[in-house]
Amino acid sequence: MNILKLFPLLPALFLGGTLFLAACDASDDADDELALGRFEAEVRGDLEMNLSGIAGFTTETDSIEGIVFSIGLIDPDGEDSVIFVGSGQPAKRTYALSPPDDEEAESGALFFVSTSDDEGAFYASNGGSLTLTAVSSSGLQGRFSFTAVNAFDEDDTLTLRGTFNARAGEVDDATGSQAEVWLTR
Image (cartoon, rainbow, N blue to C red; front, top):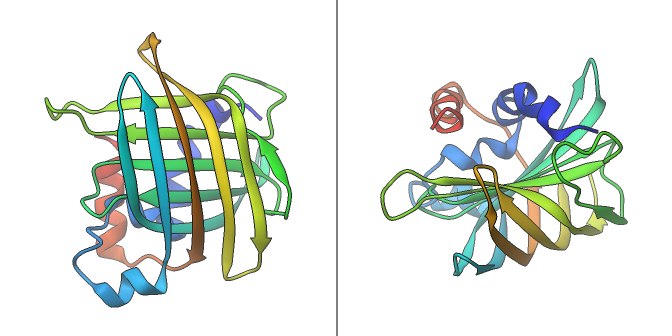
């Protein structure tokens, strides 16, 4: 799967499922946060930070790629997020996280991070793995470890690793509008 081909699908994934998390302020509603899952991650390399926050997942059917699942991890301030995209229904197994332009890839990851100048940076997986250790219609549990390369500076690389317990959820119209704004940042 060419993850770059899925960029047009990302708004549908966000608007149709729990990946709206990227636009939410987790501190707004503790009940919503508890209904969703949690994650913890560490980022090492040119940028170093620890992340934690809410986690969600969704599956969608794309006319070109077929069934696609996504897992969204977002910190409480909505500034930093990790998105995993894979083909097929999520299954209890390990997925190779490939570069976004790999035509044969079945899964990949994107990392959006805010920077001190409020510009932000966008990273894509360049190798690593996503392991789903528990799978049900209401939740996905697992771990990940991958190398990511800045989309605009190949010399800027990071390693991300962590764990998650993602929950399925729904998005309302107000949050959906916020997600569209976030995706165009």
